[in-house]
Length: 316
Image (cartoon, rainbow, N blue to C red; front, side, top):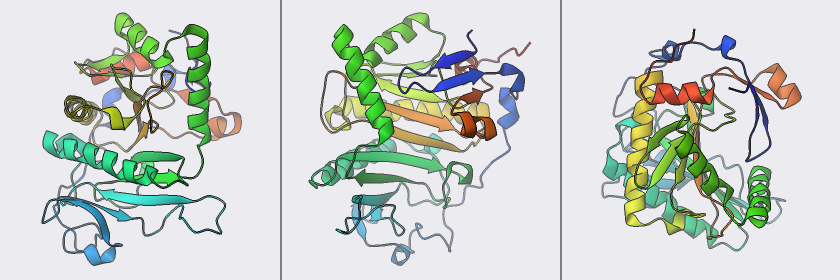
């Protein structure tokens, strides 16, 4: 296995150094959570709705999920700002401490449909060029509150990381007349070294040049560029895939911090492919990474895939 790899998506450089790795099970039980349904001081808990801006969308009455404007937005639609935007918080549950691995499938389907509905409405604003759905879980991943929530931000520009992916995808498509992600899925499935989950609708793999330990990527088998094109069966399949993956994380690594983000656009094109990345925050990018831009990862994606397939890895 090569210890120097370059991401096909962004061109980022990754050095793999297995000697620096902790054993996979070392993460277990370090960050467990007490599952309580209500906290008096939590602004997202039932009964504390006055602590947040008014509810914009909700599911259920009484609510089981709701969407509010972020009380401390990164962007707004104020005319004097250079960058305009809309910043929402999705309160994913009416219970204070739960996580994706113990959501039921129906709730995950509702959450995905809520993401789609809110994103579609944000895109109706003519100033919005890009909508990002993301989830920060635990303080190490940037979350400021425990209560299960995610965020949706629409901005009046296309961010650089998305532009890089679009440029790479277009160059590849115009050179080979095929989607780089579709070809990558076929290659990875045939190789079967970095595949974690494969089902009727989705593949989950550990990217060849993973920037984070145990990073995974969820990709639809059907070529899709937008969440808006998912069928009911695919939404159900995505809910099942997400639940399966996070149960594997919890079973093998414990209750770890992570970032999850959706990379998709608002229309279908032949060259770009929807994908969802989950980046566990079991390691910290430090001085070398910050100063050089090259990432050191102590867990090979091949080993990460073995662990998430519930197999022990022999470190030798």
